Amino acid sequence: MPYLIVGDYKLTETSAIAKYIANKSSKKELLGKSEEDQGTVEMILSLLDDLYNPTYALFFSPNYATEKNRLFDGKIKEKLDLLIKYIGEKDFILGYLTIADFKLAEATFYFEKLFEEQYGKYEALNRIRKNVHNLPEVKKYYESENAVTEPF
Image (tube, one colour):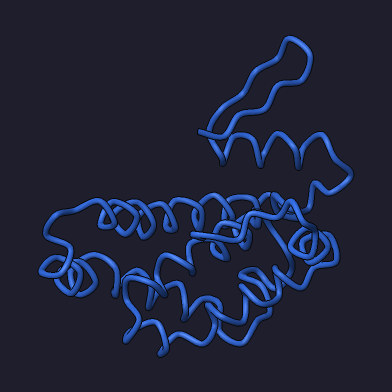
């Protein structure tokens, strides 16, 4: 479980930590540049939870082989199609970098591993992952010897 400790303050949960860091930094636009964009970021984060949670759980299922196509066709495809339609040709989900892009970039590794055949049809997922991973700070991290690159 991820955690953050700042003095006596302790925080857990990935989304809460990301929002805390964005608020404390000089990069508050990571939460959205306007109130409308902030609402959209929250909506996308919830949508990504709806996609990510059952996908992640599938890794631990003894019925993985029989469940994966049913899961994709039943819960994943419709929401993923909506997200891809919203992204369109943009380089990031909202057209500029937000915390939702980081979450999507991480989730793409799970989607690609589990739904390899279907994943190739969603070019926007790879585009956003590539754009996030090519950010100077992220790229520098992945080039460091301390980088965690596997399993995801």
